[in-house]
Image (cartoon, rainbow, N blue to C red; front, side):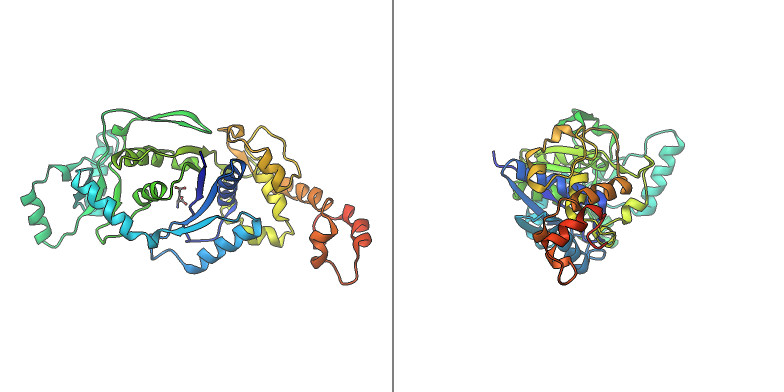
Length: 346
Ligand code: GLU
């Protein structure tokens, strides 16, 4: 089987180190198996998505050497979403609901007050056609929910986390489309994975419960789901979730004189049982195995990155740095200074 992976950022900001790691693992998996690696821009949120961020995502991937084989964007796929949506509505798997945010908030408060989990009560499913007509005549537009099948637990064998099982009865029917017609991430993503032939999805463990919901969407659309691998989250060097990591991107690393190869070599091994080594792309691809990634949070330590960077600089051949050296410095000059440097800029 040819494998197809995808990296699916929303162009609402710059990539940070966690996104870069997700992109890298998707890229490695595709390259290691002779497959394809897609870039999918999740830009259904027209207000927050910006062209400058799409451009910065492409530029960052290019700097890292993670070249996508194809690029897709969700904003261009509206017709595909409409068709699947209509079929799901006709099949009764997607239904209109009319509660306002305030009403939903109130329902949640009441449930919590009674010690119940704040799950959507499916009141909209009890509406008759006449009820809906009356509500809509009052000018209320529906939003749309995917009706979960509560009959059986949702399970999959996660390539990182192992066997997973979630009870759909503990989850709200997810809203898939807003009253203004806008799409939420969940359904378009599953439709794209089907239409683009995605076979393997690597993403952060914050998506585990989304996967359960999306598995039911694949089934409702009669499609075989991709395999899933949810990576443990990155933490700061102290082992805590760190806000700073969310702001560390390519621009920062470049300013610090970090070589793309150093960042890739570190991120390819963080959270695995393999040692961090100054390996090049080919060696990282050859040594890649998703099973090596574990469930424990992975620590991202900038000091470790700086050390690895120095080891990589010490190996850089003259040709790789010639255009960054002072005028007149030749191969012998580079070979003489190289062992003392932490960064090329130095
Ligand atoms: N746009 C989603 C995100 O960045 C994609 C998640 C996924 O890989 O499906 O969280």
